Length: 470
Image 1: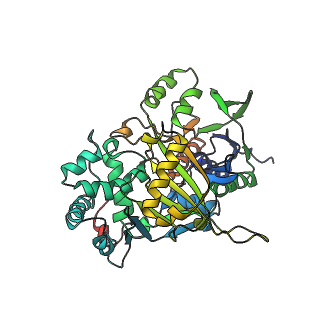
Image 2: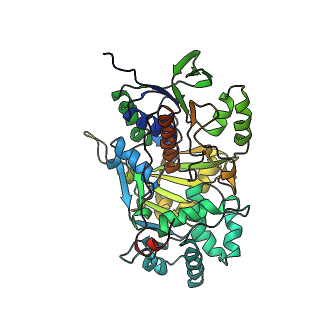
Image 3: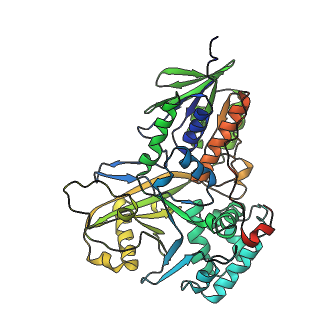
C-alpha cells in the first residue's frame, strides 16, 4: 500500500513571518519550499558583512520582551532560545550622565515597578503622578480606537511635556517605530498593558547574543531536516492559481504546490499580485500603508567607553545604546589578545529626520550626542564607523490602521498572507511577524483538512491584574 504524498506548500519570504510559517508547517508533515530573494534569512531582522568595515553587523538592533510568547515559542521550536540574553533592569540616562534605573520588585502586579519608578531621577513627582493616573486607566482594558493620535490622547489626560518626552515617547517610539502624533491609541496602550502592567515576566527584555542571520539561519536546517527545501537568491515575480494548484514564478521558472503563503512586505506584495479581480480589493488596502524608517549607527572604539550593556538615552536624537561587544557571545580568538575596545550600536526609531541626511552628518551628530552620555567617548579613538538606514523598516501604526490590515486568508482559497503588517492583533514587531506566520499556517492547515493550532496563548496576568479580563 503506497504512502499518501505529503501536501506541498510554497512560502515566499524568509523573514520571521515566513520562517515561522514554514517551520510550523514542516513540523506538521507538509513538504515546504521556502523562497527568499536575499542570500541570507531573517528579512529585516538579519545581519551581513558590511563592505565598508568588514564587520558583521545587524541591519538594526532587535529586542524582545517576555510578553512575546509566540516569538519565544519559535525560538524554542528552532532550538535557539539559549542565544537570548534576558535583562530585568533598564537604565535611562540623561545628557550629563545621570542615571535612573527601572526594575521589578516583589510587589504584586501592576505595582511591581513602582519602587524603582518612584526613585527615578529623570521624572518629577508631578510627572510620575500623571503617568500613574494614565496607567490606572489602562488597567481594566484598552481604550477604543479613534482617529485621535496617542499624543493628543496623552495631553487630553493631563500628561506633562516631560512625562511625554522622557517616558511615553522613549518607550513607544522604540516599540512601534512611529511618532506619538501619528500613533494609534490602541497599539500604544497595548504596549504598556502587555509589557508594563500584566506581569513582571512580561516586561523582561531579551537581546540576541549572536548576529541575527545566525540566529534565524538555523531555520533552514530545521525545514530541510523535515523534507523541505530552502532557496536563497530566489526572488518571486508573481503567482497564479490553476485549479487545485498554486504556481509561483521565480527566476523564470514556475514552482507548483498545493498551497502558498506570501510572507513579504506590503509594497513587495503589491508588485506580485496577478491581474485578477481579487487583486483590486487587496491593492486598495495595500495602498493605504506607509513605511516608517529606523537608523542604526555603529561605532568601534579603541577602548571601553561604558560598562553598561544597553541603555535608553533621553532628550537627544539617539535613543538607545547597545554595547554589542558585550552583548554578543564571545568568539574563539585563537592566539589573538582579548578585545579591549567597544563596539556600540545606537538606534534611532522613526528616524524620518535622518533619511535625507548624509552618512557623515549622522555620524557627527551621533558621536557628539554620545559623548554627552558617556564622557569616555571624548578621549576614545573611532576605529570604524557606519550608518545603516532601514527606510522601509516597518509599517506605520497610524490611528485606525486596523481598518485596512488584511487577514491571513485571501480571495484565492489556496493562497494566504503573512507579515507583521497583516491583521495579527499586534503592531509591527517580531512577535507580530511570528503571530502572522503561525496564523497563516493555521489557515493553510485548516484548508488542507488537517487543522492545527500553532499560536500559543498570551502570558497570564499576575497579581491584582488578574481581576481584569482582557
